[in-house]
Image (cartoon, rainbow, N blue to C red; front, side):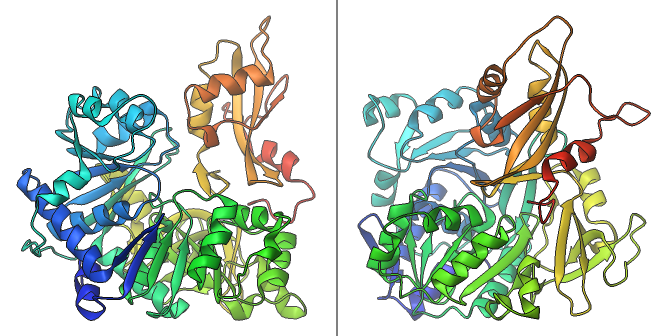
Length: 526
């Protein structure tokens, strides 16, 4: 096994003149890409950063994000990618909790970077990824605020390979997910874990140096896997800054992309574009999806549009690549069509079992908690040994998802034990939203559940009981949430009730509330 930094190092030797990156007019060969990565690594070394240090990145997709991942890996540093949709308070918490000492800020987030910097005492270096600066802030003002220009750093640094020896068991990425307590939790991902998942993805997807992936999903998510997988074998990554639909179609056409990975929501939107047939998408040989279950009717439309080239991946930040539903299993008609509601079979790197509440293995067809074991599973939760022991008990990662296995080892998801909501591919934990709702002066009780949504797959649905003699409108409460939470976490709809169902000890029964919204749907998971 080798480390994340070995991907650009080894491919630069094997495919020096092959094109590795295309992004908004910039094209880089593997040799050029690796040289830039080395320059960044050496520039960070010159600034005093070293093995075990941590850095954070706040930017939309750009090839420079990949350069940061790889440069940090070569130095034994770890990267904390920041969800750009988070509020300032949420980002401040993550950067401070991760103990990051370096912050990279991309185009469009300069003002946010300046705003949060004063609340980040541990950050000693701020680096501006792009020359273009939004609004009325120019680079000179950014320099006054303590920012260094990324390209200036690279221009004065050596392109020689760093000599740091990095162990495969070291942490490569510290990625934060929502938490049931209302605070994000850091997932520690080792080099070995990431590389195991990427190699497994390569084997199942059969990527070669002739493949080009149209990269759509955020690099701050575990959805970065297609970029790493294709770069590992000498292919090309064509990067979208943001998932703008027409840009995606144009990129597939112009760069002759052979692969795309996205969430079901994006594919649903693409199918609604009236002139989609004017784009040449014939180069696609593989269309993969993950993040949330595919509404069956939309999945059938995608199969009719793209053909039998769809595959599904099921996983999470803590364990990338748990199962895969192959292209051969995406069948519209006949007995096998029932597999369209499955998450597929365990991937080559994963063992999957279904456990009851006492961690006893369930029989075929019995519903229980999905557990996974393998070298791709996280190291644990950052600075949270108690939660780590609970999640990794018995050597298995307990996902919190409920499901069952059939007699042929296909996994079927039923519901989420932790009530997590997946809306448009983003994870939302009800407790975090409820904590904000309870700060509204008119709210007496609040519960947040998932509800079906044609656009997003699932939506954040709040059920609220107002205090006696108090009033509030749906619009007012939603706007209140938007001031405190990322937009995707805010309720899309609010139902007002006189009371909420509770247990004898007063715990709100979210399951009973959720059931009302999902009546008549195929699956309660989304």
